[in-house]
Length: 195
Image (tube, rainbow, N blue to C red):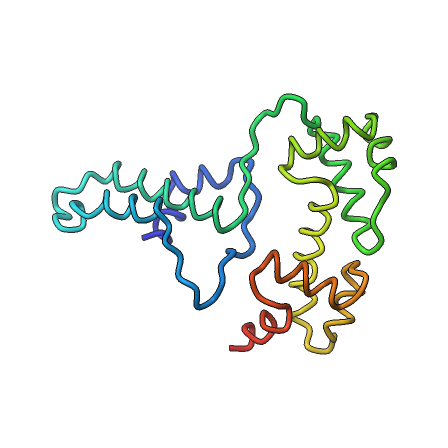
């Protein structure tokens, strides 16, 4: 049903708006989750499942829209774009991301980011967090995790090599951040790819 919703005009329209692509869902394998929102949305569909001939398709579509949005936001890290007062202008956000991505391996001083955006360091830090929901350093770590997932697909690279190529100080630094963000260690994530 979720696949049908994602392909529906409503789902496609919502997802094409200014929301970023979801790469992975955050979950811990083997650990059940009691998600009250999913349970409630599921219960609201029970009458329609018992009597599909009486189902209101519009209602079903909107419940599935709510389910997809909840999963994307809660487990996929989706952040919706909405005008933020006190945030970065679109050009400042693009420039900051561009500079951060170019320096994934080494990092960049906050002072340089702020200067490139024409802001003081204090205001830039505040505006970045308001716009993207995380501090610049945390955003950089998230991008390094995304890059590391690509590198982990290459079996020729050791975990230490992946850590170095993605800007982590060493393998344990990489493992700590990866496990915190993904829920499993890089080695376990790599092994799961082969299964």
